[in-house]
Structure formats: C-alpha cells, structure tokens
Length: 426
Image (cartoon, rainbow, N blue to C red; front, side, top):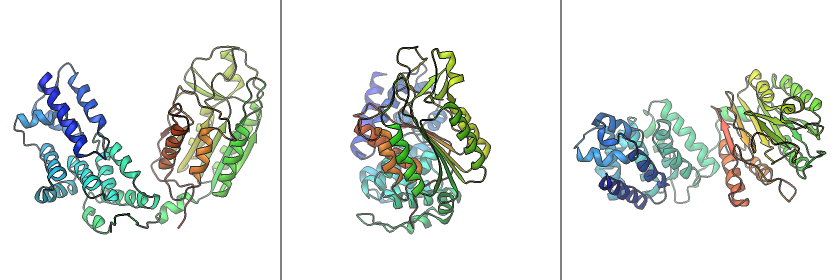
C-alpha cells in the first residue's frame, strides 16, 4: 500500500506539473481519501474501477494500467495525457472524437488541452462544463478557472454553446466550435440571447429592508446598505418597496405586500441588512422594536425568513433572489445565549438563489465605512453588465475574502435553472 501511495502521489505531481494552470491540488487529496477506505481499491473488480474513473477519480489509473485494462474510460484518459504532454496529433483526433461522442474523461482532458496548450479558454470552458455536468470530479473547479479567464461576453457565449452542444447530444459540438475565432487576446464580442434578455428585463420587484436603530447593539451601516442597494435596483428596472428601521408589524405587512405584488411580476428580490439570528435551525430577521429576553421569545418577536421564501414559492416565478447581510454576532449582548453563531443554511426553493454575507454558522463584519464589506462589493458587482448572477456572486465572494483577509466568506444556495442578469447591455 505504501508503494501504491507513492505511485499515486507521483501521478498527482505529474498532473500538477503538466497542468499547472488548472487547480489539481484536490486530486491527491481525493487519492489519499480513497486509499484510506478499509476495503481499498485493490479489492474492486476492473469494471468497478473503470466506473470510478468515469467519475474523475484518477486514483484508480495505476491499478487499471497494471491490470492491462482496456475500458473506454482508461483509454480516453490516456489519450488525453498523450495530447497534453506530447502534442500527439493522432491522440488528439481520437480524443476529440470520443469527447464529441460523450466520453466524459475525454471531455475533461480536452478542456485541459485547450486551457494549457492552446490558451483557448472558451473551448476549455465548454468541455469542462460538459464533463462537470456528467459528474467528473474537479471539472467544476476547472470550469471555474476557465471562466475567470473570460470576459462576461465570452463567458455568455461559452455557456450558450455548451448548452447547445449538450442539447443536441453532442451532434453540433464540432459545428459550434468551428464558429469560434480565437485570437491571443480573445476579443470575441458575444451578446446575451433574446430569451435571456427577455428574462432579465421583465417586470422586477424588490423588498429592501435596512434596520440600524436597535435599542441594544445598534448598527452603523444597514441604512446606507439598504439605500445603496435600492438605488442600484431601481436603476436596473426594479420596483422597490423600501423599509428602514422597521418594526415587526411593518416587516410582516411589507412581506405580505411583496408577495401579493410578486404575482404580477417576473422576478422577485428581497434584500435585508440588520441583525439576524438562528435558533433551532430557523433563521430570523430582527425588527428594531424586538423585546426579547429569552431564546424562546424569538419566534414571536422576529420575522421567520421562511415566510419570505414561502411568498416567493407561492408566486412560482422564474427567478427569486434573497440576499441577507444579517450575520452580525450577538445581537442581544449577554441577555441570553442563542443556539449558534451566525445563520443556518437554508434550502433554496425551485427557481431561487439565497445569498448570505458569510458562510453558515459564521459572523459578518458591519464594516467601518459607509457600507458593510459584503454590501459594498455587492453594489459594485450588480452594476457590471452581462454577468450571470452566479458569477456575479463569485466576484463578490472573491472581493470580500480579499478585503477581510479571509475572515469572511460569502455563501450562496441556489436552485436557479435559468440565467439572470442585473444589467443587460446589447
């Protein structure tokens, strides 16, 4: 087993050396975790090992090679290594053929080839995306790395082409790729499709709440945060219901009003800045008039976030967005001890994305400037044109982590199936 570990570690190092621009750090972690399994890979038959490789677990490659296995997953993988390391034209053609026929190993290896050897990041993104959708480990990470190399227009083109390739069951892949004219600086101008434009500029409704003036532990920034978010939303076509320093009754009325109006809209968004707390797995938004002395009083004195999600779910709209900058620690001082720090993770109903200022169970900074670190970077990102909402939140996460030196990591849960853009420019 020690010898196998050394072989696999060498293989992981070889991957990193030959694919230095792709994040393969997790490859060896995956290998180590697999080796530690009591039964071990040696106990599996060849078909089972090939199935593991089909999901991207390269730890099984040395075992398959030692057995002289000839399964398609292994051949695709080895063809890919030949292409990446040796510029083997014959292997490249075989790799392209296998990838266009749906071979997931070939798709990931082809993505690496275009990323490292050709610097053609649109093609790399497409192949990584196809492999990720089929469950290849690390392909999602590789896809995100490729996405960071693309402009918003290029990323949109890559996403649309990947969807068309998959929709046609790979029949149109080569035709799609032949339409890509790649230059060194990748100055490709692509525009959102008409469908995406229609979805992103439809009737939009937002509820924006900023609570600052708490009797105990007042906050500096929620007013400013809510004002700035509201301003950006209005500039992007949202009708906004504004609420500042709200009582519980006012928050409940506004939530009901939001739910009723959402029935005639296309997109719904709720933004909250203020104190929030988690108790027994439920998240609550704290009104400024909350009179809470014990944990068991929170459900009566605060707004359950699930009520907002229920309104969104009832409206059955294509895109619902809930943004919570409410993970400030210890909203009640030492009057009682809550069950946990920060907020709990929530499942996003169908067609919904839930964005938190920080990871579940962690706390967020209120900030020393006009805005909290999260909202400051959120406002900037929302004004960037032609960026899908998921990528926008990734940009926010990266900026917040950098500003807070890694102490705060924004988080999202999503069940969105389509694309949404705050700003769409033709």
